[in-house]
Image 1 (spheres, rainbow, N blue to C red):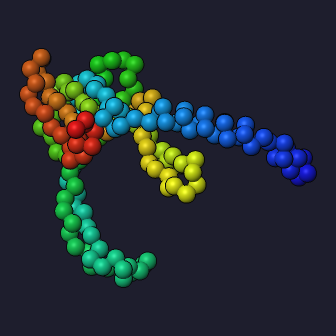
Image 2: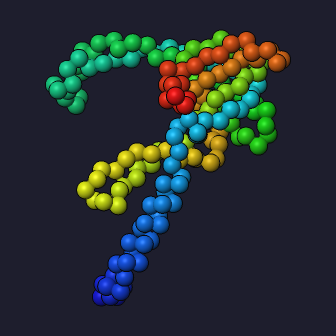
Image 3: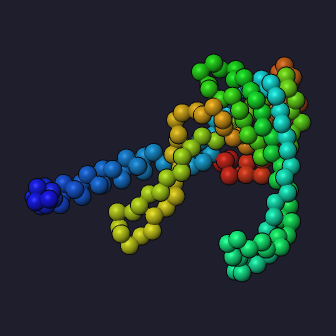
Length: 174
């Protein structure tokens, strides 16, 4: 334990501040707005499963007790579609696309999907009095299952239609 204390005492505060400042600058360079973190990929759809589920809202969360069944109220419906896909580019490992709405896409369709690819990080200020903030950085790697916010359906070179999720607006430049 004494060795750890000796090592801590040998740290030069100016070197530590310089290292922290450099790290902060590096982190700032990685931060991007969400509209820069969406990518377009082309796929052939092999299967589509669309579903609708009912959501429920607890009418009085302040009286919520674990184990107690409150009388929930219907909150609405949640629509989703899951596409099994074959990517046009063989280096893309995506096999499943989730799409938060119903769709007119059918197996055999060629689609162009707008796919967000990002990580959410929390950046802490060098000034301890300031709050941390949520930022977005590129995830850099594709997963086998991704989420699409826009789907364009094609027949040859002709676009047959565009479908967007309700959060599409978060991912476009305004």
